[in-house]
Amino acid sequence: MKKIILFLLYLVLPLTFYGQSVTIFYPGTDMNLNRMNQLHTIINDNKVLLIGGHGTDFVSLNTAEIFDTQLNISTLITMNSTHDNSTFVKLNDGKYLILGGSADLGIAPGNNVAELFDENTMTFSLVPANMNYGRMIFSSTVLESGNVLIAGGWYDEPSATYGEVYNPITQTFIVTGALNTPRSGPIMVSTPDGKATIFGGAGIYGNEYFQNVEEYDPATNQFTNVSNYFFPNEPNWRLTYSTKLNTSPKLSDGKYIYVIYNSDSLKYRMMTFDPATKTFEKIITLPDFNLPVSASVLDILPFDDGSGNFNSGVYLVYSFVDSVGTRLGLTRFYRDNNYLGVSETSYNTFDYYFSSASVDCFVKFGYLTFLVCGGTTLDNFTPVNHTVYIVPNGAGVELVDNKIPNDFMLKQNYPNPFNPSTKIQFSLNTSGNVSLKIYDILGKEITTLVDKYMDTGNYEADFDVTEEGKNLTSGVYIYQLKLKDKILSNKMMILK
Image (cartoon, rainbow, N blue to C red):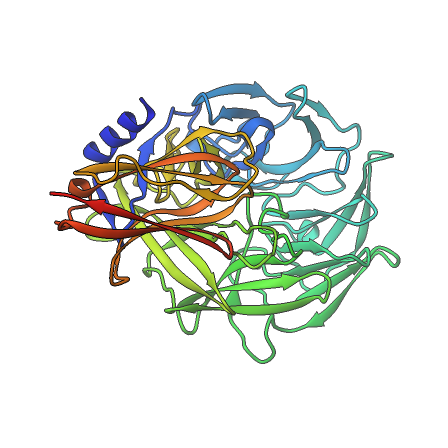
């Protein structure tokens, strides 16, 4: 039934594909409320937590939604306060600390209320003490001590100038010294030495972007300017406020990955920040990836196999507007030695904007899946309650069972010989980036059946000569399965 539904969606949705593989976009269940600029993260059982944001007429919301990605339903929960253009962290005890946010109409300085969310009980509870400043468009990070550093503010000089630290034991807030550069929406990363690095962000009124890097030292409760640019003598790279947890772009090797934009060259790039060495590094992509001038990057989502080298791919989700309409795009990058190569780009056309939507990723029915929540109508100010699922290439593969196999295996296809279709079964004893490709006897690639991150389990893929549209002749073909550095191949025969 699942394959039939996906196939029907493939027929009715206006999709444009690049490359040999297929990415499917299809609508999910609407959220309970129209919302934009909400905080969001994946919690237990692959549920998506959507916190606050604002609704119609810029009214800040005091509700959260728990979107069950497996059942495709959303449950509304009332919070103790509104949280729009706010920030949150996951504390060491597993609870989420949600902080402040703007008043209705995005008015600063916003509120100074903090509350906790417990994903085990799905409940919100107020923190007894308030922050020292009302804040909106700001950031937070959990220090090595377990305390939380909070900094930044929009349209409000005091909150942009002074940070504060939350102690989860005493549930109190203490003001820090002044930042060297008051700013809104900075990026903050905790470092292993107990300090935190602060970079990026915009001016208090959004009229400039800051490139200098500062460091917070809890021993002195002060900020120190450590460099003027991410990269020496290379100005005008930008990155700003995110509505996700600040740990979301963290790779398994401890580095963080970001998309940056240069206002001089008008180019997008990726960079990493290593908290261990406190250094930035640009990532080479081949060919250079560039987005339309009207593009808005929604999120970068890395999936690596545990090596920290992006072996399972890096996914970029973005939107843009062209002569056809509003586009929602997905580009996948693969790791090749010291650079990222562009593997696949797909997009779909919609009748609303995505510039303020949230994107989260999980495994649904054995498929790597993205959920895009919210957005706005074409006036770019009125939020919508729509959701969209994106299933990258390899959607024709079915999870037979999720038992962990003893070995990495590729079985003989059946039937064999075949015309027009056959099934290919394989087993993955470790998770990672998987490709399943078909070649002719001379080694020319015919098509890609799978190219995505997959969990352990036993799978079955369909290969249909007529669906591939390759007009394949009778003869011997090779199908090859690759998992990380392991490769298995078998022969199949088409008889016409």
